[in-house]
Image 1 (cartoon, rainbow, N blue to C red):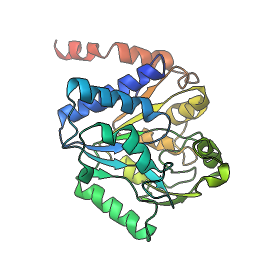
Image 2: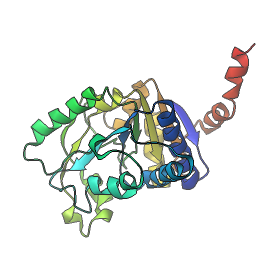
Image 3: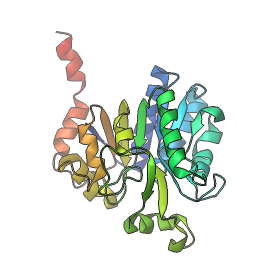
Length: 263
């Protein structure tokens, strides 16, 4: 796990967008896992800019989103389908046929979840999964206590998650109580992971998932078991980390590896 500490949200967003763009340039038919919420908005803005100014090509990219609220139609303004269209999809040249976002208003959620897992497999698996982290340490909607072997399924949301997400709705009572979400097992099968987090309000859970024990009570800690994870934080989100000096040293001295190899 490599930890990159940016000065602020803007730099965090630019760094994470550059990482995603680099993967698309490396593999034009990248299978890209995407997240929603406040944190990735800046990353998507920078990706749009890279598409417009540097020609980053999304035409062969396939995307899979992490989750969606049960009961919300794709056109609902609080749905994650709508969020992705407004913040990324309609501003880049990604093919609608290659975009997968869970359908919250499906008539058979259990069957749909199995179908979604199958589509990921048919696409060859996710090459790069973008993640945020919830206030209780969850990734996607894998609330505390979720199995590390879990697959795409319907998950009941914790009260804290409902409170955190109520800012997007007129009333807290309007927040759906269930969501379709990729499982932790699904996420861990991604070839690479990029987690981004911003603000002091995330500092405690960021420190717990990076430097604390692996536990289902902080589901992001499962990423300690993954072989390739980049974490990009702003200073606020990194403020509770105990080993910041080491992370910064690694970031600033990676060139020494190539120097050693060249000897």
